Amino acid sequence: MSIPADLKYTPSHEWVRVEADGTLTVGITHHAQDLLGDMVFIENPATGRTLAKGEECAVVESVKAASDVYAPVAGEVVAANGDVEASPESVNKDAYAAWMFKMKPANPGDVAELLDAAAYQKLVESEAH
Amino acid sequence: MLNQTPLNALHRELGAKMVDFGGWDMPVNYGSQIEEHHTVRSGCGLFDVSHMLPLDIRGANVRAFLRRLVANNVDKLQVSGKALYSCMLNEAGGVIDDLIIYFMDESWFRLVVNAGTAEKDLAWMEKMNADWGMGLTLTPRRDLAMIAIQGPDAAQALNEALPGVDSITANLKPFNAAAMGEMFIARTGYTGEDGFEVMVLAKSAPFFWKALMEAGGKPIGLGARDTLRLEAGMNLYGQDMDETTSPLESGLAWTVDLKTTERDFVGRAALEKSEVTKQLAGLVLLDKGVLRSHQKVLTKNGDGEITSGTFSPTMQLSIALARIPLGIAPGEEVEVEIRDKKLKAKVVKYPFVRNGEILIS
Image (cartoon, rainbow over the protein chains, first blue to last red):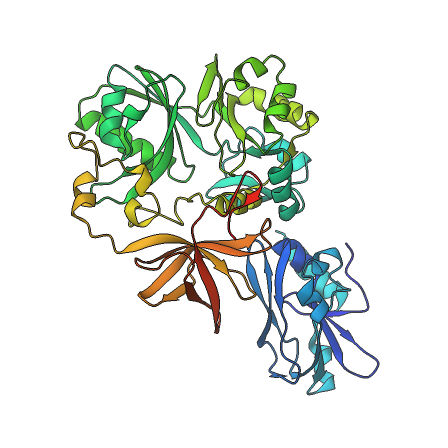
């Protein structure tokens, strides 16, 4: 599966979409769900929670293992997707459609520090070896 | 360099995701672990279990040797082909390994031991063989491959893959085996379903596997093997018990034969002196989340620990085996520490699932 060019990425395998109003939509990448396998449990951060960059803020669990999801930048959680909590397997079906939460970044400029698709592609390839 | 089974190339052709499993390059799944799990509960699944080691013991005194070597009593084996599950203990009563013993005749017993413990087991058995002056021959059978065929349609698939074998499978009762030349067919498994574990010469294994697939068998990885065995309430060596744990605190008292007082086996004295304070219990998580090994269990009688935990694809909730203090009965509630939370779980009598049926209400 190709890595969408219009998204930003973290080294810990979150994807980030910058919306028109400046909020960020966050999920885990196709590569991350592929490593974890069949998803069975997802816990999102509560709306209104303030996150530091890199803070553990959500959990995804497959049959095989539990994995933390980290805040890509500092900011405040403004929405959490109850649908993925109800149907964790939606992350396996389409990781880029199954968003987990939305946040308002503390500093909109921080998004520039995230990886672009090409850099993330390189990271995935390097991990494969 | 990882060890490879004779089916390694075939797993890769089938698109398996391969992992390092205790030094063996093994398929963890061929796509979806959950789908593979359901296949075994409703149809027929094929597992490559060639990493496990068949071990032939031959000589005049095999029965006498095994009477001392293992905690269960091989005198329960009187009919050729009959199998026995047992622990092999150290002097302290800890579990060196759990294994299956097949009685073929008085001068030939076949054991199947775990992959990760195979070398240690063999060294221990050779030492006992020498110390006790038994003069037996122990032959590891790395020239054999082992394929488990499991599920309600397992017999049908095996009969179709091996024309003529139905004359054997029709009369083969659970926990019995039959040998035909180098082919060895046992009605055993690790899933809680009907099924077979078949040993064939390594060179025949890929052809046999393909024939089983043509007969409707689907490849199943080690991921589903773990969720299936946990639903079936079967222990996993290294997780639910090891050299530091007693079988009496690992849900395995039923495999320790202390009744025959004149039979002294390694570990017996230690077990008889030991005070049993813990039990292996089944847990069902009542809150949302997934139970995992090493999570702490809080009970009214003190703390315990989860030894194996997972999401049960059949029950659609999380289940576990946990070593907890005695005196906590099925039906009681306990708490499990998961990350920063204390979640509610119910103690249950396991197995959780057998022959496709959920046994927990």
